[in-house]
Amino acid sequence: MKKTNFVSVFAAVSLLSSCSSGDESNSALSCEQASLATMEAAFAFSNATDQNLDQLCTAYKNALAAQIDVCGDANGELQALVNNLGDCQLNAEGRHRN
Image (cartoon, helix red, strand yellow):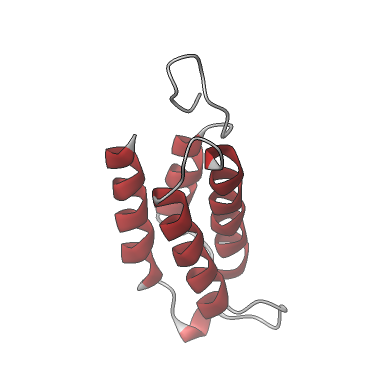
């Protein structure tokens, strides 16, 4: 689980550089702000405990969705991260269901 979390955090951080100032619109949230929120949510999720895993997964998934809305996702990498998170519910083995 921690390896998956680390991979997600690494991928999210590497995707932050794909957001340019030209991608920003007149929305309330800039691409830079959305990217920062995603990075913070990914970090929190990577340090989740059994007690807050579902909540932090959902927050990370929502941050990714907001980043997609604001910045776009031309190569589909952000959407792939969303898909890999599944429904943010743990199965009997303690893993997220996809």
